[in-house]
Image (cartoon, rainbow, N blue to C red; front, side):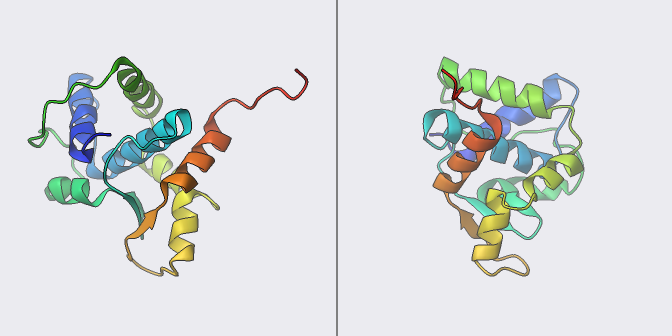
Length: 158
């Protein structure tokens, strides 16, 4: 597992290098997607911090506070973090998530995270939230949702 800020910086640097910088909102969606896919593929979270169900979608609070000064502007400078080198499988996952999300509008990503019965939707409703309540989204819920939604289904005919 990694500190969320390290993974955030990884995506921010990819955005800068590819002339596709991320806004704080898009960064949160990409982190959520990366963590969910890692849970689906390995059974383990990618990041140490909880992903929380905030009013406007899933949020990693530590990353929110580090980058909130950017508002809706593209982030052009990462924050200090450790230099832990991910293994090849993690790098492959991060590259795949980047390739899937880099050209998707942040509003479309946000709409996807808000789908009925998504992990955000379930956590937000279960906590009885009407506005921000920072309800944790369980790793088990994300693992199940991302596995069912994004991983190939076993062929029942085999």
